[in-house]
Image 1 (cartoon, one colour):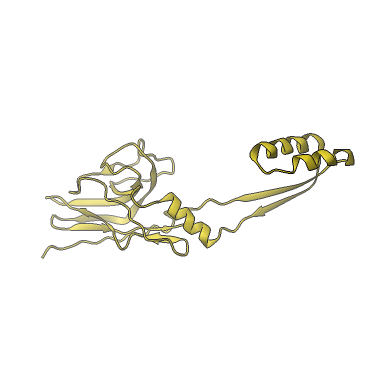
Image 2 (cartoon, rainbow, N blue to C red):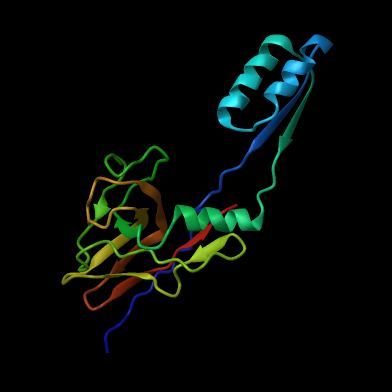
Length: 199
């Protein structure tokens, strides 16, 4: 029976949602300008809104300014995951030793190189569950990487929207190191489980 070396890596911050910061200005106008304000306030299309904003900038004065920080609903978090990481568009790769940087891209990641000597011909697909509570995972269909003859050491993982091993195009969405390097021998495989959380 073939041994199976399993490494489960959960990425608690694999996905981050978009947050809004609000600023509400209360703008007052002199009475002679009220009729023009009413005329420009009939439609909400972008062109009319732009004209209304120019009118307020020119003729109004700010009476009050209110700042606010938003709450993202669970439905919003789930939508972010579904829209950002649709199944069939993202793939899991493995990386060699080195530090990941926020400035890394598929074309440029000087601190590390991609590991491509596992036996699969492409990066395995990332297949996430339906989001729930702002979280989704691939535990029902993990990405599996099989060691070649002579074995292999896995240092970390990456998620990109290009299935080609070693491919340098597309978007590098996320990358991380395993807690420690995972050396496996021929006849073994690494099973990569990822959890994407929007928060």
